[in-house]
Image (cartoon, rainbow, N blue to C red; front, side, top):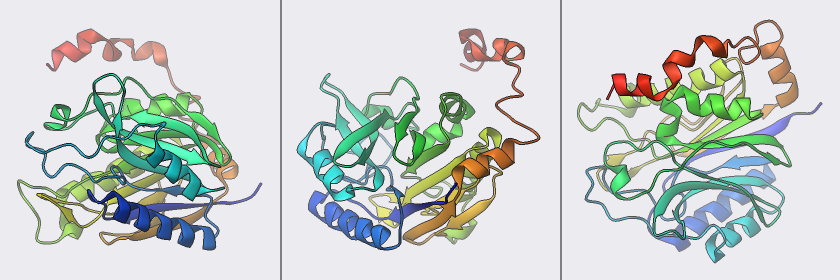
Length: 285
């Protein structure tokens, strides 16, 4: 057993793709120098996020998962496993808010955001599920921002064998009742709570990357972090840009967390049936 060095990024990305790639290249170089093997960039790291969530913002530049920009990202990654968010041209007439995982010049996985807050659905189509996949650093699942507000998202990935879940975000501070500082912001508090709860309830390693700074009307909370399977914070950038870096022996960490109370093992799916179907959803419509 050996420790895996993981890094989560908090940084600012915008519509200038060349500037985004320059920032990514510098961060990959720093991560490689520090011995990082898994590196997570935020949602919309290629092309920036929406300028607002009121439904009037233009979409970021659309990129194909098999296009030159993702190939460039894969080349920059080299032997690192790298995840980064982008606006995906789905080839079906729709755009998707997506995150890709690359390593060794190849695409290993791609996730389209399923849950869409406020008016994000005016810019993007919705993804249709959560699937884990194998990488050189272990079996990984990915999700984007608001996806983590739904316990089913992380649970689906954990049940699909994910040992590590990477959640990339463009999570802003509260717009309706802003705190005087981001440290005191209620949306930041929710962001942090979701990160720790999802790690703990599924007993997996959680990697959370987020945008920092401001973009249009949005002020992002940064707070990139790594959380262990017991819900304990291993590294955190706070509300500033930076790298959260931690060494995790993933196999040992999972075994220790699940030794006595195994949350996946001790599930009782037959008891949940009434809460999982369309009837339950209709109750809250």
